[in-house]
Image (cartoon, rainbow, N blue to C red; front, side, top):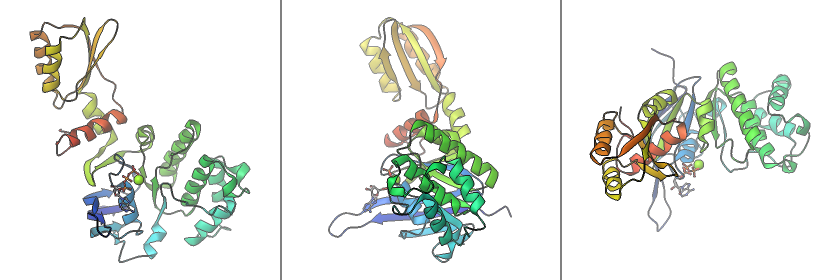
Length: 329
Ligand SMILES: Nc1ncnc2c1ncn2[C@@H]1O[C@H](COP(=O)(O)OP(=O)(O)OP(=O)(O)O)[C@@H](O)[C@H]1O
Ligand SMILES: [Mg+2]
């Protein structure tokens, strides 16, 4: 038998119910696993169910059905002891005591999970240095900037030394430099300390930078669960940019947009630029035939540089248009 997964979510559903109103099915029979030492991105549009599933995993909320295992143990059956194995920074919530200093917060939260501050002083100092908070370590958290508060929350979560960490929007409100710093630190921690990290973010650069795999949710369901490198390869070979000389006749534009839903057209000084994400590689023939039949003159064809943001937008768009799997292999 292989090593236990760090996390296993099995057919979990959660509906928010309010008296007199129709319920909101936030999580709809979700299943996924996260291997030990993996760094996984949890993505999805607003309201997709990311925070809800994280709260269910942390036992902050009870799912209506399904099972959640952390290092092979059922969260509900082993609650609250199982909390020793996971820590989290949740979106928009106060993860800190504002009247305590940075150092006191770190001691307090690590103490909650039985981490002795005497034995771990060096480690705490290391984390504080890593996040450039040394100058602020004796300052009350309420007197810190938003980004510094956010970094302190992450330090407190990491200081608990749990093998599994959830970061819900960790770079929200961070400046560009600090966001880069945080990514660097997370990569380093994953490599050096073999932590398992699940990170949700709308910042695709962050996800692309630190995650090996992404799970994309939409309307409470998993629509993609794949390696970042595989997704890039898949979409990279099917995204094209085609420049045409002159104008694009109206009829041709209509034919193209009927056949290819992902097609977009931009007109510039020289001519027309078509961008397209093909569903299947062989569709390029249909595209070329359509252009030739209409007498269009191709100036240049190039592969579009693909990044995770384009992949994400395309996958979500296709899912909304009724494609069940989001992408085809
Ligand atoms: N406490 C709540 N009571 C009622 N409905 C809720 C509650 N929390 C979330 N929801 C609803 O559940 C759905 C999923 O919300 P959730 O916060 O899990 O989404 P999310 O993926 O984290 O979105 P975001 O990217 O905006 O953070 C939404 O439709 C939301 O309105
Ligand atoms: Mg959320």
